[in-house]
Image 1: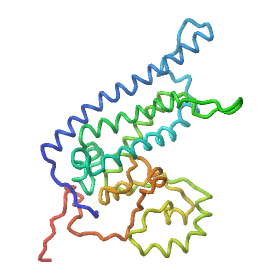
Image 2: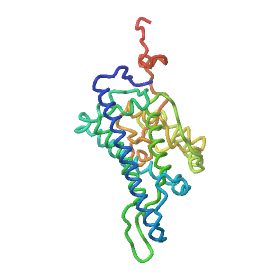
Image 3: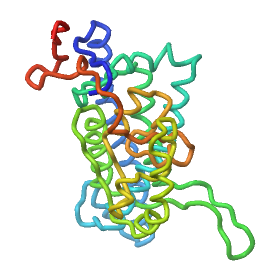
Image 4: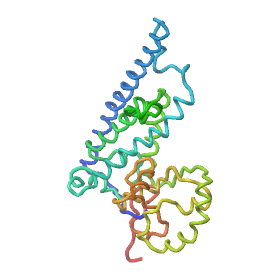
Length: 293
């Protein structure tokens, strides 16, 4: 633990948490309401084109599940969500806005309560963050307006089918990742990457020469993952860095866009650890340090 832990909640904390939990019900209703309407229209189109008056089998049918509509949309959903969330999060850190909305969340410098700390935000921020999932779903399902360039070239994205299982996985996994971001657990999800492994050999000298500088952290590569040939998809420590150093790592589920925008800051295990900030594993609160020792 390198940041000061918020041991005790105030009335304002409990109020915001309660409001946001209640708002979750509204979000789920709107989220699956949109999915139902979108898939119902698709089924009606299929039914009319096949001259079938029996209608579709409903959005919760398992007969039409496939890799194409259940697995393939997931990375796109997370990338689109985090694109807009990164911009929103950056906006909330603007000096003229920060004190009115997002500052409340940053009273906690060392999150530990998982989803409780995650939802301890201003209700406006929670609303925008949650309903951003619907924006991502709409864009993936409906696509972005296509424009024809010439006779054979079409620019844009036509959208794709998203099953109800994929929609559940999106918000379910999102909730788990957001919770892990606000714990003391070190959770890293990586995938093998031959290109990263190749780049590592040529970057070793450069990484070694720059590791002594604490300010040179806005790098695209993670040196430890590079040496093993893995590309980091998710690392709970990245959001922990954000709570200590707010002008970095604005992404929620991934720092992909932070790497693109130049706001990524890697976790440095050599950062100073303050003994007075450590947590008691039994109580989850800051350990009382005897200064006479």
